[in-house]
Length: 149
Image (cartoon, rainbow, N blue to C red; front, side):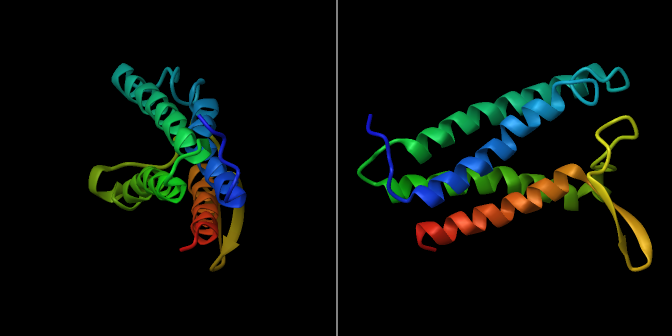
């Protein structure tokens, strides 16, 4: 298997995207705020562990697409973009559909907001996941431009 060194900027940006949806949640969610939170039902804890382990597995596959040499390296990068976009797209689809199922991006005993900003005369908390994943979308867009979008 050959190491791919062309399109290095795109590969590096895509790697940051992969770490954002795989390693980040593994660090953030395998603790008392999520996977071992005594206030969560056992079934909810099961799902968060399954979700995070699935994202780690998907991340390993996507890293293989990003960093292995292949005759159609650009095609592999676009497939990596598609998989990354599917993960982040599902996150934002869930955020926007929360009113339909009574969801929330935070729990009172979970991860605190990353910051609080003043907007329209009111203090607004910035959710950590939403803030970080918005930044990831910017990185993904930059990677797509670097690939040749």
